[in-house]
Image (cartoon, rainbow, N blue to C red; front, top):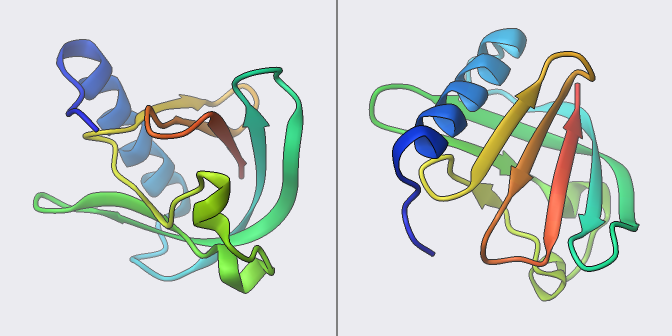
Amino acid sequence: MGKLKGQTLSDSLDSLKSFHEIHDFECSEFDVGIKVISKLNNKIILDKHVPVRVVFDKDRQYITIIWEDAGVKNYRSKQLFERYNPNFNEMILDENSDSLEINSTDSDKILIINY
């Protein structure tokens, strides 16, 4: 996984920062709706409420998705990850649809987090 560069990196960091500011839960968990969409055929593979935790400070920036607490077993075999970092995963905040999109180059899935 390569580090994002330029405007894509800046936009991803800004998106996670804004998502964090909207929720302002200071590293505690909160539930969100997550849709997992196949990049291959645009079909929804999973649609669940899942607890997440966002960390955004000068040293660390990431969102942790606690799949197991939502009953998603073997999430890694589905190319889903526990931690997504905006330095390496493109993130786009869509305030019109109240969602954060995460596009990982290491997966054939896109995550849409509705808040």
